[in-house]
Length: 468
Image (cartoon, rainbow, N blue to C red; front, side, top):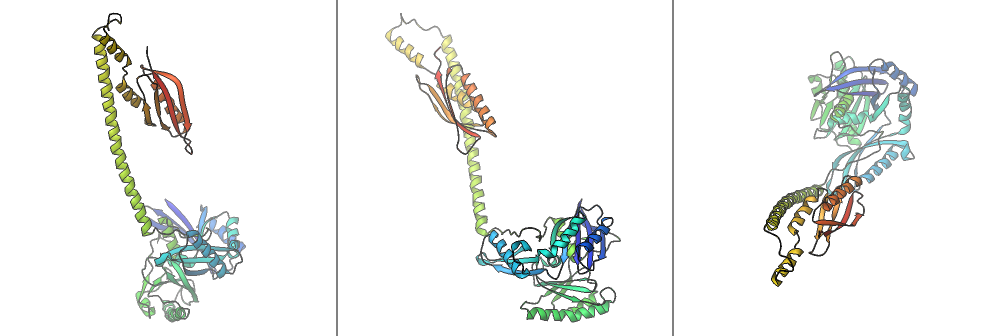
C-alpha cells in the first residue's frame, strides 16, 4: 500500500492531507485544516505538533505545497544548448526574478514544456528566495517531520492543465481568496489573486463576484501581453452549479471542472485541486520538479538519435546471428575431429595387432625406409581433437603449431569473472594437456595480462612429442 502526506501552506491556512493507494484506487484517509495567521517558524511548529496526534499521526515525511506571493513563475524559450547550460540559465533567471545575489540564495525548479525546431527549448521555471523557505524548514525540523519535496501551489494547480491541449487557466479558491493561474502546458505563466465574498455560504453572491472578476482578469492578461485562455478549469473548492458556471463564462469558450483522480474516504473533505494533482503524480511515480533539488532537465531523444540507436540494434542482431552460425560450425568441426581421432585410434590398434615389426638386421632397404617413416608418424588428428576438447568455454585458442620432429606450441587467451577464475581455467587447461599420453610437458609456459583487462590473460604453452 502506497502512502503520501501533503502539507499545504496558503495565506493564513495550513492543510494536512494523507492519501493511500490500494491497487488502482487512490483515496484520502486523513485531512485537517488549521488557521495559520503568520507563517513564522514558531507558529508553524506549534501547528504541526498539534497535527502529530491527528492527521499526521505516524507520518515520517511530507511533501510541502507553498502558496506565497513571493513565489515567481515564468516561461522562457532558450536557444539550443546542453542540459547543464539550460540549468545554469534557469539559475541565472531565478536570481534575476527573486533579486538574490548568489545561486545559494535562491531555490528554482524547471520543467521542459516543448522542443522547438532548431533545437530550441521552451521551459517553465518556478523560483523563490531561500530566506522565505528557511524559517518554515526549521519548523519542520523542530517537529522531526522530513520534507520530501517543496512545490509552489500554482505549479501544482497547473498540473491539471497538462493534457488540455489548448490555452488553459485554472481557478481555485481557499476561503475568501481565489487564485487564477494562466498555464502553458503544466507550467504557470501568470497568476492573479483576488478576494471573494460569500465563497463559503452564499453561492449566488459568489457566482456574481466571479462574473465580475473574470472579465477583469482577462483584460489584465491582455494588458500584460498574454493571450487569454479558451478553457477555464475549476478547482475542487469552487462550488458552482451548472447555471452559475454558464453565467460566469463570458468570453471564455469553455468552463469545465478539473479532472481529479483522487477521492476522499467517507466522511472526509475532498482535497484541494493542488493537493489532488500532486497526489495523482506521486502515486503514478511522476513526481514534479522540487524546489529543493538542483535544477535539472532531461532532453527528449531526437529523431537522429533514435535512428542511430535503431541502426546499432540492427547491427547487434546481425552480429548475434553470425555468432550463432559460427558457434554451430565450431561445434560441428569439433565433432568431426573427435570422430577422426577415434578412427585413428582404431586403425593404430589394428596395425599393432597385425604382427610384430621386422627386425632391422633382416629388413630389406625398402622395409627400413618404411620403418623410418612409421617412426616419424604422429597422431595429428588426435592432437587437434583433444587439444580442442581440453579448451573450456573460458579459453580461446588462437594458434596450434606442430611438426613431426619439432615441439608443439599452443597459444590463445583466457577470460573469467575474476583474475582467480581466469587463472584457474588456464591451469585446468594446462593440466589436461600434460595428461595427454603422447605429449610431454617442457615447462615452457608464458602467461601475460591483457592491458586494461585484469580478468583476461594471453598464454603460450610449449609441449613435445613423447618418444617412449
